[in-house]
Length: 414
Image: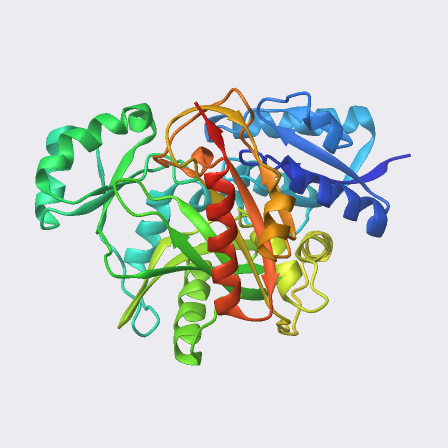
């Protein structure tokens, strides 16, 4: 007799904690087990999933990976009732599995845009129509320093450089003037094999994301570091916006979804908002990172995005009713104030209590003995995070900044 299961294809970085949320929901609401398919299993995976299957996520090995997973499921007598693509690299394999079992999901062809940023830009540039005020961005792949210099010159001496097949802000850099090309090209050397793309540099914009699960959507306010590298250090749900700006962002997010797949259940589409326009940063065919779904769970009445996703994965039915806000929730990433070796960590709860701030969640990702740096090149360079809630948006912002500063200054760094 077969056992029902959900299949999670991959997870980015440290998001095994989200796999555990899905495992609990699968057991409680569907009497189903959770199978994690990952490229390289580690000892933690078996603690947070019922079964772990190792399989390559390379697109070229798609058919072989599918056959390997199917054989593993058959040996364990597991019958999938839902497929949950949970990492950028795992989206194509998730689509293959959904197609094989006749479950909701994008087609393998559509899913490629969830991994390769070049495909989305091509789809956007070829679209027959765009929402009012939406601006497609120039995007060009380069394979050498001279090609990079030529493209940056064409764009007026400024550009944004990023790997074509990476996430988590890895390798993303601002080129502020023509003379910075050599430095930028050398910095992205580890990603040359996967392709490097040069895009228009968008300045003076605010950043948001259009997040959606099973048709229920919200807008997240994003705060990003300045300088050569861009990494997201703060998110607020829901974004406080005038109706017209909210409409423009929602139209841009839905447009990005329509370019890729109407049959996919979870989206994290990143968007620039300019005074007179919107522009796509990139599309992500997976749940948002940085605990954004957890923030939505705190911010909206009776909303559990994880359970909503599992339900959609079984029947493909969108949820019609809009979300009802009940307050604001925010996450702030913590940075080391200087470079060195981390010797000791402060007690977050005690610092929050001293400041009169209610700490919903706090976590250090760095440990004593780790090397830390003041320059954040990607999200992996933060040392931890805090999550707060408050019914008043300005007060939430002030509390996040105040508590983050207290914690960062209390780090003991040699």
